[in-house]
Image 1 (cartoon, helix red, strand yellow):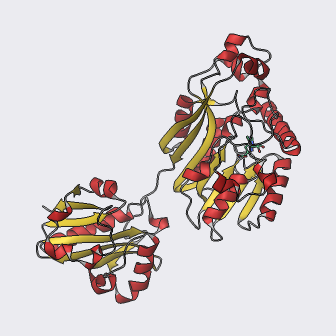
Image 2 (cartoon, rainbow, N blue to C red; image 1 turned 60 degrees about the vertical axis):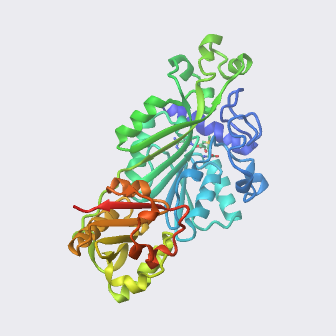
Image 3 (cartoon, rainbow, N blue to C red; image 1 turned 90 degrees about the horizontal axis):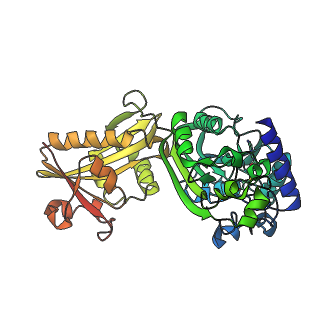
Length: 419
Ligand SMILES: C[S@@+](CC[C@H](N)C(=O)[O-])C[C@H]1O[C@@H](n2cnc3c(N)ncnc32)[C@H](O)[C@@H]1O
């Protein structure tokens, strides 16, 4: 294990000094100029590259774009495992904004030096680079919202330890977004023995089935591994990659090696009503916070002031962390403005607010509850709502101010019959 780590460190120190690339390089490590290698080429769009100084564009050693699907929010704490020269670290720092913080972790001093210079040049004041290994992350438990990693886990000789550590430092509900090299079929032990091919992001790539097991055993859920590019190598390239292997043994790599998008989540811990937060009827002084939360979630605020007394709010430590509004008309009710603040998401706060609003609707004599949603029809379907035609909306509900800000063409009308 130590031997692999030393070779990897040495090769990447050499690569950043020479301005060359290691990943998937058919001649072993560090041949083609950065960004032009088969694996690293074209992983970022022009709109990303144009934000980076020319020199930094040449310092990518990745095999995908984990920031693009990480769902990073302003204010998040992000950790980039094996941050290299810091390209993804910098992209994440733009997404978190000044209210967030991004940690870049790498074991290679030469990489860290370059990354620190890059962050200074880009005036990214919310980035901290840390020296250490991804198998023993120097951060406290439950301190990170999103973990990124670009073409690094394959280099680790102890992948289960990497995922155990990632799980430990992620907050409940936190997400993992990795781009990495994987094998789509198991490969023999002889392929794994080449240290140069290991440092070149080939021999250490895990079989996808093993990766799913490592992630699940660490405790992750919603594990997804989506192959993005499959690599085929000529006989000549293979013999340069594995000089000591017979052609047929090396041949099993071609068509089995792929870059993949790997995502997973640490299960969220639900917040308990009455212990972690409370639910109550909104008061006039809540109006500002309620409207702010709705705007943050892209929901309309028309009519909120007029109907505030029919809103339920979730409150935690004096702050409104969730809302659900109800407008009743005869035996029908309109459920609106279901929203939760970022820290309250994936903690069953929204479900609890909706259940309480439905109880209120039933108490007030409603037999059907309607809603319109542009983005959450799947979530409401899990709560028992079914899609209905908008023509089926009762007249009094149709004229509700809550529907004014909702686009009729792109929204789904849903209904729940109360028993
Ligand atoms: C292929 S490069 C990727 C760099 C960067 N993520 C990018 O996309 O350009 C791998 C990086 O991971 C670092 N690395 C490899 N194994 C590591 C480990 N076990 N712990 C910490 N860093 C590691 C190397 O020093 C190198 O900077």
